[in-house]
Image 1 (cartoon, rainbow, N blue to C red):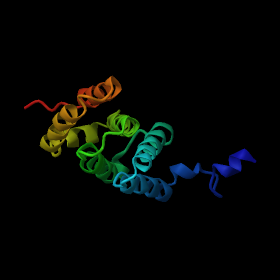
Image 2 (tube, rainbow, N blue to C red):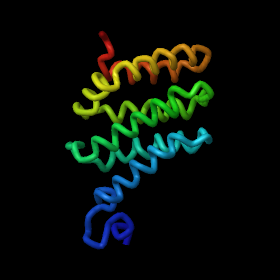
Image 3 (tube, rainbow, N blue to C red):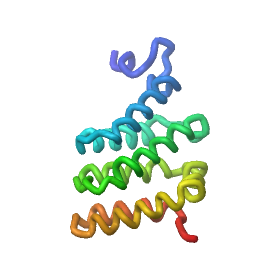
Length: 151
């Protein structure tokens, strides 16, 4: 009975279905633009958990969606000067780490095409979060350690 909840009529796990996977990633990406920090936090958690539990080794078929997610995280959350909610920032930064983990193509994209933008984001975020708890500083360092932003 429980297996029926998590599978499609064809017997495949529902989140391995390409259409549902793409919809989930797109939904999380749009949710990063919410004005409610809890929505943003939960979007980061959902995307993190999806990437952890359901993705395959190859991410080439979802590369564009993942690039859009990174862009949304960067532009709508990390660069948002009003975003100072500790839990939201940590959830989104950990999601960012999970997006890059074992994804050479996405990491390469961040290190080349998105390098200057993301480097500026991390510097601004580090400045803005000086007075916030150390957990945020550690999460920023974790993300920074996953990419080479040196000139």
